[in-house]
Image 1: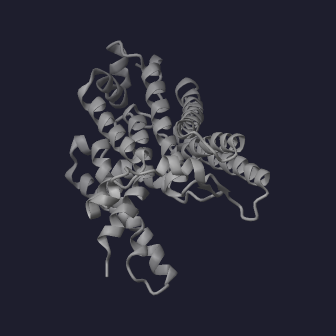
Image 2: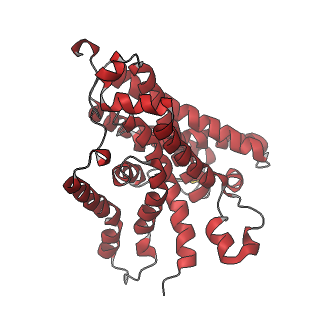
Image 3: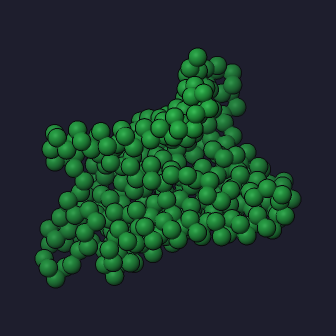
Length: 329
């Protein structure tokens, strides 16, 4: 029997890394920068937070201050993700290197970076299993509201999550508002659609591209930190992220570059991704893998439908992935 009360909370915690990655990538793509390095950025953000948390827990002997246990990993995560964003911008905006190549290279680099430092920390712990457990920090990140258990199914479905879950929803809503309703959002959308016209209107192309990509990377990096500290209960294992970074990029297309829609889209993707855990498959691994394909199948269907409708507002930014040469204006 399908247990909806258990399914929804599992889908929500699964959806938060997707939502943060999708929101960050949406900001980048709206400015015309196709950042395929999001999986690598999430890795770097996660391992940066893990490194800060590991040394803080070691220095405290496990007796951590809840505020500092949250602040140190958050700052390290944002800093590591910011560096990845700056690297992407320097190569694609300043040097005008092909964005697809840079993004794929950054994904490979980010995963290797995370595995190298993750493996190094595992050796420092002399653990018998290839993982790091940061249970004290994880408890601070995943702590739910104290009265959630007293509200029955309502508390379990809506109030039983760590603070980053609600922060992710707030970030998506604020991003949607900024992109659609503010002058800054108008400038970002303008350089994503037609950078030559935006440049002629006095908009600083380089400034807004750097700003968009770097902020987008920092938001995506939080998705990686959430995965380790909340979803995985503070346990870091090399190559544990799976294809969540790519799912976040697919989600951008599925939601038609609208971060507010990504709140529901990420929940749908996450639900489809873990559906095999709740639907009897008889131990058939092939059937389980077919269930994991569902988010991508849904994305392809959406692409086909939106392509047939051929509405301009449902299409990607016109200058997405294209370098801007001012002398060609």
